[in-house]
Length: 264
Image (tube, rainbow, N blue to C red; front, side, top):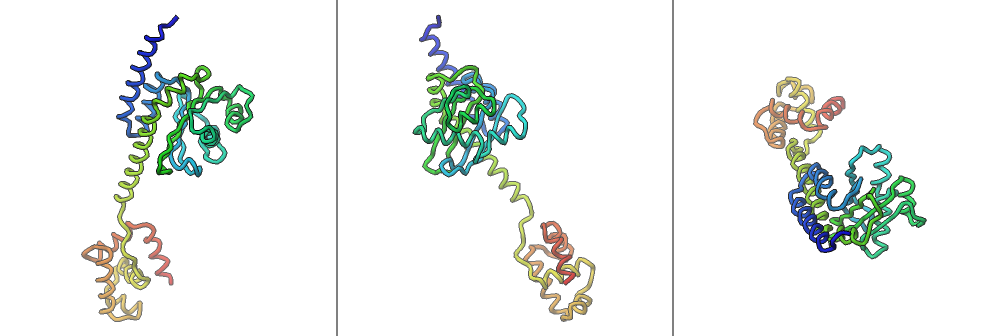
């Protein structure tokens, strides 16, 4: 028979180790490694479902971290906010006063999540969430495929670990949001809007026409063409005609737009 005091000491050590290693999680692959390492030791499971967003309104992004490769249709049935398992578990959690949620797919319960578990062939689930005052920053976690039916002690464990699960997922979300913003800012910024006439002028500049030739084509004076080109250079933040053509060619979808303007 296990010594309760010794087991409690082991649990405390595992909890501290799991918390300590979670602090370094910033990226998605790090979360996966942590979930399959420290978290797996503290709370054994087969698959981890995560949700981050406005849980109250069902506006959230769900992810799945599994030890096995899941078929796309199975993953969709797990993570779909509307009809997937994650949405039903969140609904049950909310109805249960947001206490740790224990579900058994082999039981006779007819609630939505239990039926979904049976349909997916999942036996045991332990789930919990964290609702922030800012609704869009709430998180929810569901551990599927536990080796045995979750106990009261398991519910206590996930409750103790919840702040760290919550912060780890938020760090991942913020990192990916910042990374996406960096990629967007790395792309050439769209210029101030060019008028239809300026696009026509720039199109003919690209064809190598002089101001005189462009004026004849568009039935305007060379001086007017020059004024248009000066405005184009300012709007595109370039210093010469060649740079202006190259600049606009790099800005999607304006390159295609030049052809349509030219045909008018």
